[in-house]
Length: 216
Image (tube, rainbow, N blue to C red; front, top):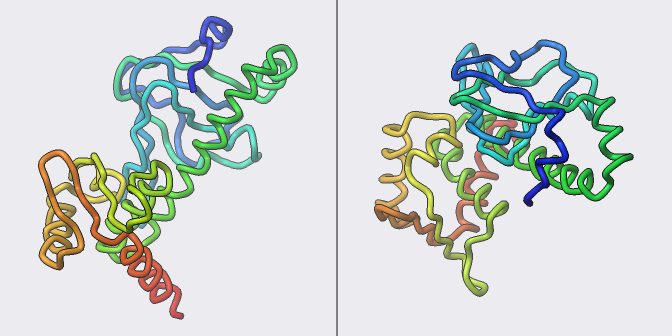
């Protein structure tokens, strides 16, 4: 949802490419709304740094600092020259009181961001890499429904690199898994799209792997 950014100029901050906006585990009391440039979110999992997300203009990061008094759950690094709006608890409350319509729009962005981040984090907790890839399609289907009529067939305009990024693996590893799914006729691969033949089949597959991981 578009925001009237002119109202927020006093909150603007800038970062150069490679600048660390904040580090995982450090205390946090600010969050950011990107105006220009991209920000990479990374997290240490099993002693390996994994890319959780790459955020674009209009997206929010660091939002849990406003909602919880807890250390940063991931690190944020500027990929480009970044201009962002920096909010802390105090000026966010001032914004809400002085510009309630704008604050409501920002809260909607914030809520969606938290939900999307939770889905992506849940993908990375899967140990089975095939299930991780399948879970990416479930996430895409939930956040951006791509189905037609009541069919279980889904069409996604996503690249292999996109799927690999969300699944936290290399493109080559992801390509191998997608080719395996294609050989099982679970998906169809095209240069500009991926068609999942039965999204419910992937839902059952992912749930079975989660249950196995829990020892159920």
